[in-house]
Image (cartoon, rainbow, N blue to C red; front, side, top):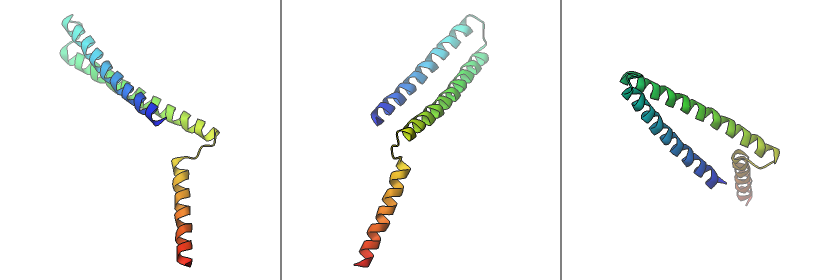
Amino acid sequence: MSDLFKKAMYMGVGMAELTREKLEEFSREMIEKGELSEKEGRRLVDEMLRKSEEARKSLEKKVDATVEKALGRINIATRDDLEELEKKLNRKIAALKAKK
């Protein structure tokens, strides 16, 4: 499952880079046509990239929340649950060693 998430993240990074290239290409075309100044073109690209990043972060939060909710419904132990269990086990082992 972790491999699937890694692939999705790499795909997202690739899409972000593709988006940047397309935005810059669009901006150059608009500048060449005289519909935007260079300054306006840079501002447009920066603004669109900023909005794209905000949308990506928002989507990531929603996906995280949805996955967490789904995992909670099927009652799978979380990393925190396992770490707490490990701490308890270590305390029990230490207590048993101390009794010897």
